[in-house]
Length: 150
Image 1: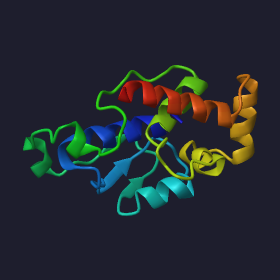
Image 2: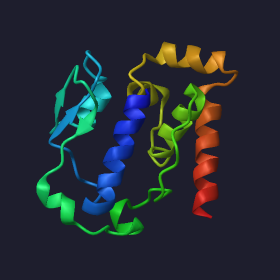
Image 3: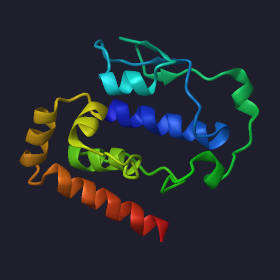
Image 4: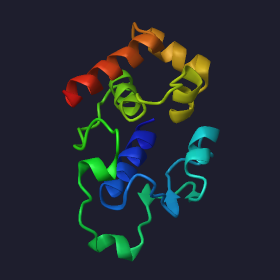
């Protein structure tokens, strides 16, 4: 899951310069198995290379000289323009991942499980082990985002 969050963070950083529709042409991941169907759909135009020695996102040379678009142009509706440090625990990382998606109309557990490369049941088990449930985590993520917007 940390790789998924890191990948989304890197893509978000590039979108600060290119706009919200930018897609990478190539992504390298250290994992040796395919990403979830959801991630593959979201990055349909990208070539995803598995079992790489390090994770990376390939950038076109033309992007390296672009100035930032500014918060509103880069990510309309996105609650934050600053990147926070990744949380060290599963629950914190999961909530950080949800921050990018809280405005989705149908932020259901299947969608969230796909983001984490987990089954719905595995995600439920992990959250139960942390003493919480999916709806509570989504509510907390929405509250966090609302606080930042204020």
